[in-house]
Length: 212
Ligand SMILES: C[S@@+](CC[C@H](N)C(=O)[O-])C[C@H]1O[C@@H](n2cnc3c(N)ncnc32)[C@H](O)[C@@H]1O
Ligand SMILES: Nc1nc2[nH]cc(C(=O)O)c2c(=O)[nH]1
Ligand code: SF4
Ligand SMILES: [Mg+2]
Image 1 (tube, rainbow, N blue to C red):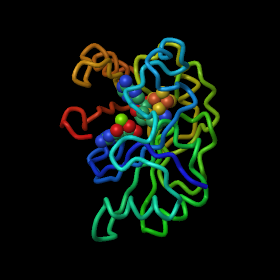
Image 2: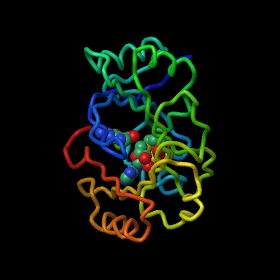
Image 3: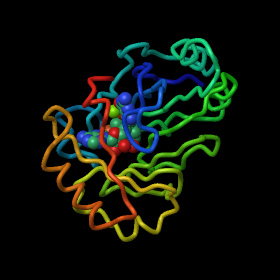
């Protein structure tokens, strides 16, 4: 099996419980909730995406087999095997993640995190599962390490989500395009946390810091 990869880069995890952690980001191409084309955004299930996941033309993008992909991720991490961390994202990575890439990354001593929309069952070998539900989609993977809800999404059933099996519940202000931090959405998300102490705020630190 070969994988269609948009880009691979070394940075800090910007979001969620592991914000600030050194991480290689492995972004797979394609998503099941939006084509990625602007002309389709208004009719997509997920309409607020901040990411270009179309094609294989990004930094280190291309078509890889499992061994070559894990080797590229390891090369970008550099020397040392302590605390190696790769975040698999997209697009929707569960369209492509399989045993071969999970095993190859583990063989390179990586802890593997995933960012998924939860509409496809997540591979059981993943070490840190972040699910970010999209209103209007059918979230079938309802357990994991962190649930990260982008806000506002008024059609969300928050009470139902609070019964899902996650260790951490996070609310992340929707980036509406203005420098990555929309003041109104930050205020809404802050109010949400003040009313629901089960949740905490996740900011997109990489956008604030100018990191990829
Ligand atoms: C680009 S998605 C890729 C992974 C997967 N498809 C998903 O949606 O979880 C990565 C993360 O960015 C979040 N995200 C996407 N667009 C955003 C926006 N405009 N503002 C804030 N977070 C956003 C997603 O909800 C998800 O948690
Ligand atoms: N630095 C950084 N942190 C991130 N956390 C989740 C991201 C994603 O697009 O999945 C992301 C991203 O694109 N960059
Ligand atoms: S599900 Fe994720 S990758 Fe797909 S369009 Fe929504 S935010 Fe973007
Ligand atoms: Mg991103």
